[in-house]
Length: 245
Figure 1 (cartoon, rainbow, N blue to C red):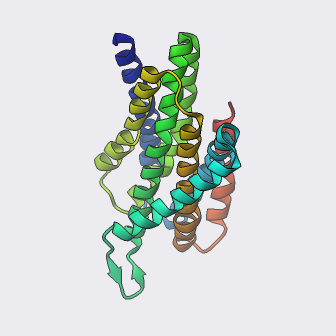
Figure 2 (cartoon, one colour):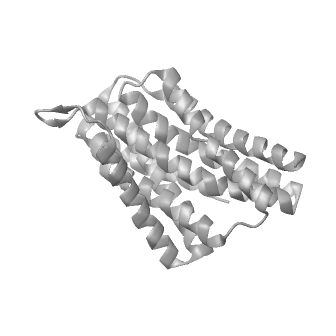
């Protein structure tokens, strides 16, 4: 039981430190300039597209097959729509308040990251049960992968006017499910492949919907030029580097 506790603590640190560092990076970059904010928001969009299309969804399909992947994507989208309808909205005569729109995007991304971190924790816990060396390697890789996710979550929250300390606390909290997953992986040894694949696909569907429906349109709203498009491309390239295994 001591081993399971140690793995759970390490798994929690992996998630919290990874997303937390990403949040700190985003908070240090956000500046009150619409063109720069548009680039940064585009950059986070590119990051998320890379993580989803090059990491989450391919891994889901590899583990569980195309059927589970599609079901997970659909469930992720339904989850976003359901939570979106539950969130309070500050409506103006022109529609949703701009600040609230950014806050909503940040909250949704946080949800997707939290869902995503559960199977990542399962991978850490299961790897440690196999060998300590494999567990350490997996923990380092996942912590690195969580950096762009922390950036993607923190940026719209900060642009939406959320206080820095609260943004940081939320990015840290989004990493907590990694510890829960690590506990499950260490306790049970082998988790159902279908369950892991479904979680990855749900997270992927959630993030893809938010990126296309919230982040990119908001980036274009901030600045009508090419700034956000350049940001998306740079973010995607940056994301490619981070998701390479």
